[in-house]
Length: 65
Image (cartoon, rainbow, N blue to C red):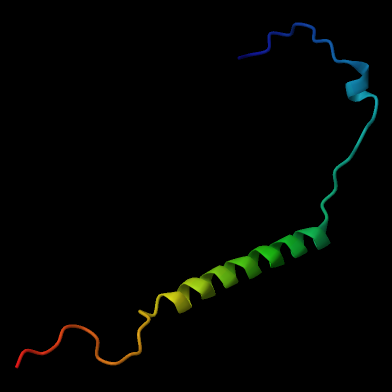
């Protein structure tokens, strides 16, 4: 949809207060660290859980005699 220059009414309460958002490096680093830690924990859980389990002794079918 394109704007053709018609007038638009904006409520005063919408623009009565001006705010500025700022980049927060400390919060960004904390979030990144938490995310990385969670990913590492998840990867470790999947890596240790996929070793095949068992006792490591032979496995498989019995040898016919």
